[in-house]
Image (cartoon, rainbow, N blue to C red; front, top):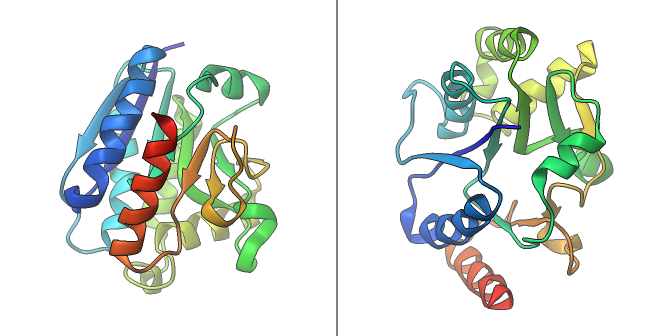
Length: 201
């Protein structure tokens, strides 16, 4: 199973240390990785660039392309991502259930596992082309659009929270990764990042 992880960040003061740590995981499990450091589309919020990046990398020779937000730190290096993938029957896209619909969203796109096939490519194309313009810079951007899309089509594999990611407020030792979502202060994020990086040593 050939896997590529990809991410994008324009805040290296925060993301570089996370990337350096996650790279150790990718190397351990023989996964490739691609990083971008600026938006791929100036007409939408930078979060939308994950869709364009996934589309680009799905044109390469990988079985799965996985997006991971720049504020997600992989904590449990004993868990092989392939075991998680093999556990679920992924037809196209696998995402987290946003901690059981926390704050009304049924999915969270911090980690997006994409099976490389025409169905996945078509879904991402629809999501990009049919997005409500109010989500270009408003709401939670592509997460809102993907949430709305799956409410209608119900095609995603939505898996339990704490399987591929855990929000900071419900993270426990042994979880695969911690997601510093919803923390507006960058200084606080950096402090939390460093605290959990120290736990990995």
